[in-house]
Image 1 (cartoon, rainbow, N blue to C red):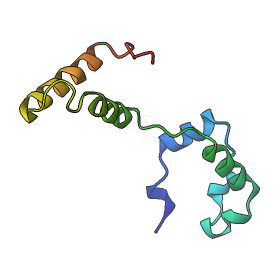
Image 2: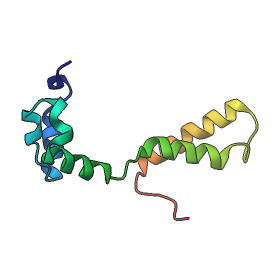
Image 3: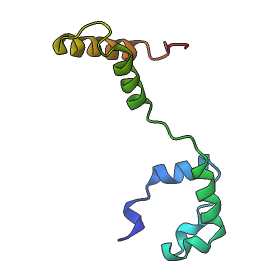
Image 4: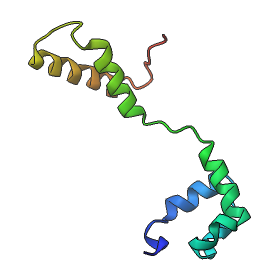
Length: 97
């Protein structure tokens, strides 16, 4: 497999924003483990906080409201859709727990 299909303009933008030296891309992937620029890039990326905000919000909503307001599945689904629409309309209105 070629790495060309995995690297895009967005990848280059990410490297640039994180000030990552991407010179390791000019070398064979089999040699990256011994390449300083790759090891530095790997360290930088591994220190980033990984968040799937949409999934975390959905899980939190379900945990908070599951069985609290209604036990009927149809009403739960309607309530979830209402909360999701509210979050779309007011994206900055996060709860302060």
